[in-house]
Each structure stands twice: as C-alpha cells, then as structure tokens.
Image (tube, rainbow, N blue to C red; front, side):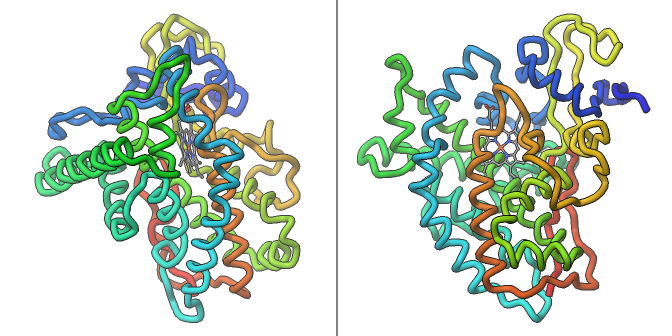
Length: 369
Ligand code: HEM
C-alpha cells in the first residue's frame, strides 16, 4: 500500500498514514496553510471569502497573533461560563424529540445544540437560527457548486452579502454597547497593545460558522448512528455515564468528521521517501490516518474500550482545532440529555443521506425511530 500517492488530474499528493500526517502537521514552516487550493474561490463568487484571511489559512507570525487574540474566548473559564446554557439547550432539544415514530435525527436533534451555541457565540438573534444553517450550508457549498448553476450562484452570493451585513451590524453594535459575549470580548482583546481589526474579526466569525456548526452536527449524527447500530454500546453507555467522553473519542476516531486538510510545500522536501518540489499541494487524509492499523489495532472495529483520546480528528500542532474542547463539551451534554430521555434508537428503513464532500463527512438526513 503506497502511503503517498499522486492524485491526478487534481495534481496533489495524498498522505494516508497516521505518522506521515502527523509529520506534516508538526512542520508548518515546510507545509504551509497559506495559498493552497482549498477552500476554492470560484470566479462567479465575485469576491474573496472572508475566511480566506482567517487564522486557519495563515502561517506564523500572522497565525500566532490571531490565535492568541481569540484563545481566551475558548479557554476553560469561557467554557464553564457557557456550560449551564448549553446543558439547557440540550435538555430542551431532548425533551422535544419525539421518538417512537420516524424522525430525521439531524433536523430534530443534532442541529439544535450546535446551532444555539454558534448563534450565541456570534451574537445572532435567536429568530435567525433557522436562517444561519442555510448560511453555513451555502458557504460549505461554495467550492462544490457546478460552474453553470446560475440560480444557486445567486443564492450563495446573496448569502455572503446577508451574512456580512448582519455580522458587521453585530460588530458595530457591540462596539457601541459591549455585552458579556464573545464578540464584545474579542473587540476588547489586546496582544502587545494590538487589537483585531474589524476585517479580521469578521473573518473569524465567518470561520466559526463554517468550522463550528456542520462539524458538531455531524459528530452528533455519527454518534446517534453508532448507538442505533450497536444496542450493546447504547446499553453500556446509558447505564454508565462515565463512558460518555470515551464513547465520543471513539466516534471521533471511527468516523472523523474532518476527512481532509490541505497544505502547500514551501521548499523541496522528502515525504515518505518521495522528493516533493516547493509548491506541491499535499492533501492529508485524516479519515485514513484515524483507521491506520499501526496506530489503532483493529481500527475497523468500534471499540468502547480503546485506550486514550486520539486528537488526530481535530488536527495537530499550531492549527489544532480551537473549538475541540467546546465540541467535546457540546457532544457530552447533548448525548447525556438524549440518554436521559431515550431508551433506544432504531434505524428506519429509509436510507441515510450523506454530506457530499471530500472535506467533511457526516449524515445530513438520519431517519431514526
Ligand atoms: C481547526 C476539526 C469543531 C473552530 C480545526 C482543524 C480540524 C478541526 C481538523 C484543523 C485545521 C487545519 O489544521 O488546517 C473539527 C471537528 C469538530 C470541530 C472534527 C467537531 C467535531 C469546532 C468548533 C469550533 C471550531 C465547535 C468553534 C466554535 C475551529 C477553528 C479552527 C479549527 C477556529 C482554526 C484553528 C487554527 O487555525 O489555529 N477544526 N472542529 N471547530 N476549528 Fe475545529
């Protein structure tokens, strides 16, 4: 099995083994996050993606500065402040979930907690929650929309304008009258006397919507599917709630939501015995790394007793997911609330629908009873 393969005609190198993926992520000076091909900005968009300037597409020193400015908003103090509200969202969503008849679990449950959390982080009015799922979907679809889909293009362009206008108003409003929320905190944050510019803050808010919503919805969808397909796992986790965090770690490894990451080589280098010139596109197959036998024996098995968390589903190194503790907390609270109210999940005969993307993987429609 080759560990490094050139994928034509797209012209990038795909890295599949755990150790090699880790090597790339540990060496950001050689494997840059800037200037690679994803997320693509098609011409019809007629503008640049605000998150193309956000931290996930930056190298040091810009990345270091941006990350330092927002780190605290996702640290332990901020998380414990958010926890009671997230628990309340989770309990309400579980109370309103009526199983026993067929439901789409994504719509009826998985979407609700992450949408409320992101809505609150972005300072979005609750009445807008149904709308910004469409915002996130449209932005995620930007690079996979066919070049001749004119109506769809118009909708996506409209979405960017709508989001930008809304988020700019939120920023201006918090600047006038700060509240106890993330946007106000980020406006006040300083590193060596320097603040985020409005454009940087806007880019970060766009990034949060794309990076933090769909991913957590998919984590909850995968979790429900694993529980529905393995009644023994359901019974064990329901009876012993101390297993919930371990269950989440194994779902993250077994069904990694982020399937691929892109990097661009800054100098000639050797990877898995192959010489790559400067400017080579490298695609990291996180989905494959998380099923690497050398790292995870019996990797094709969902194993609740597997030792230790694997952080690989959240990346590694300087770009390690800023929202990982938040995503883990959301999943823990949501699954506990679900297990409190629900004695079992059953797969419906209707097929599961999957997100059509090589970047993220998860159910978009999950029929359960
Ligand atoms: C970065 C996965 C949830 C915010 C990343 C990266 C991965 C990832 C793999 C690394 C990107 C790279 O190296 O290029 C996930 C998964 C999630 C999740 C699997 C849920 C299951 C969240 C949430 C938030 C968030 C809830 C915030 C609300 C971010 C940000 C970055 C990031 C801001 C960029 C960090 C940087 O460039 O330094 N995420 N994420 N993520 N994630 Fe997440």
